[in-house]
Amino acid sequence: MSEAKVIVDKLWNYCNILRDDGLSYGDYLEQLTYLLFLKMAEEQRELGGDRIVPGGYDWPSLLDLKGEALEAHYIAILNELGRSDDLLGVVFRKAQNRIQDPAKLERLIKDLIGNENWMHLDADVKGDAYEGLLERNAADTKSGAGQYFTPRPLISAMVDVMQPGPDVAICDPACGTGGFFLAAFDYIVRHYPNLDRDQKRHLRSGAFTGWEIVDNTARLCAMNLLLHGIESPDSDSPINVDDALRAHPGVRFDMVLTNPPFGKKSSITIVNGEGKAERQSLTVVREDFWASTSNKQLNFVQHVTTLLKVDGRAAVVVPDNVLFEGGAGETIRRRLLADCDVHTLLRLPTGIFYAQGVKANVLFFDRKPGSDVPWTRELWVYDLRTNQHFTLKTNPLTRADLDDFVECYKPARRHERVETERFRRFTWDELVARDKASLDIFWLRDESLEDSDNLPPPGVIAAEIVEDLEAALTEFAALAESLQGIGVETEEESG
Image 1 (cartoon, helix red, strand yellow):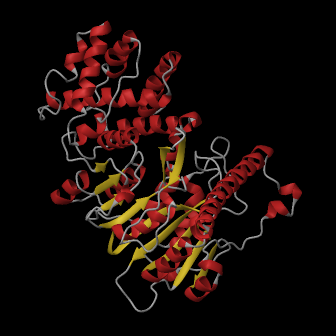
Image 2 (cartoon, helix red, strand yellow):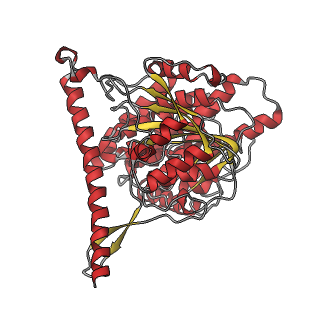
């Protein structure tokens, strides 16, 4: 058993004790993050580093306290450290104590966290341990944390074909727990073993910039980076806790790797005149966007294009509706095909995301300078969905399942691509001639529809039916919402 696995099991088993007090997996992981940070900051100080945490609010200040005094001081630490504007502030932003039993808090501090020398652990070990905790938390479907956790085999394949270099600036405008940053960091370290001092400094601090709208997820991301040796506690935070779609940040990047949230509509909750809470759609209006829409996914596609430098490259996970939706969707697709080189589309199988009811794809494109002729000459589509059956537990997606896609992609030799059964080429003329310039393209025959002996297991069939129904309900809800809007306009006109 690996050292990281031993640590994960030890920390996770204690969570079962705390769950008796009503603590969720996410709450527990949050408390672990605070305490790990305090312990590592103290270890760094003991090794001769700078004092990151103010005296009196640091790890040693917890060790001689018990009972209510320990609980009160822990709460005071969380309140104080959340006021900082560096990475320390991101980790402790709006932090609260969720552990109601002071005796259990004491054991967590003195036995589980305090008995380990975290700074002496290899970055891979402590980083893998934290990633293991994040994945277990994502698998807890009740918490909803899975929406922030992109399957690591998919991230690995995306990074492998994007091939980031040591000098690039990489952005993820919906960074979740930081999976794309860690995979890019690992790729660069493995493929560029002889980095010079400036390149090493850039890779450790400055290479990655992210946005995350949820406080708790942002803190998990910040801690994930720290445990993997990226950034330091006193760094200016590379993670911006904000809505990425609000405005352009004023800086552009060489590469964007992202899996925006699956929620389709941007909305806010308001209290109406009758005192009842209701949701209202928010249409994002920005001068640098091609179209105004409340569809969050379409807005993220537009936002990504604005984040790229000329010749910058992007890999974006998008749901199927981005490929075929009309109205603003068609406008955005036609502009994307014309203004960027949209060269590759990976159709993902179902059953690989923790969020259910998702049919997703990865869109790869390069931003190009202004031109009178369209930049997309041809789009290559790889179908990893038809006749593929994955589930999170019994048949999870592995990196090996994406090997053929990576080989077909030919990152450094795209001009040498050849068609295969699952990899097809479509020209500009073919794409724009399709209804609404739809990129929802498939050609393989679904064998399960024709051969009853070739059906997947009943559990897989049931899961796929559930996903189809949930996706259909989402589409119907969006249609109903749009029809209500039309009804309001018609009544106003007739009045």
